[in-house]
Length: 80
Image: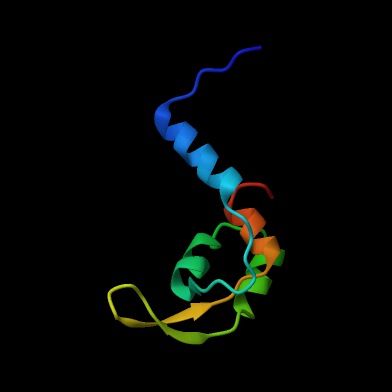
């Protein structure tokens, strides 16, 4: 069977496949909470208990970041 996908779909697929979970990576906490609004209840419970870590983004703006568990990473990459 042969599938035809667009270039955009191919880039998304390659990014998803190549992205590995890194337990030390910091993510913007507000963005993670926003992305998990439609998630199952169990994941929302995990999101409520995420640590708040002060950090700076690439533009030097201070913000709140967090480290996420692998369960949330799997959900966000569409493999849940």
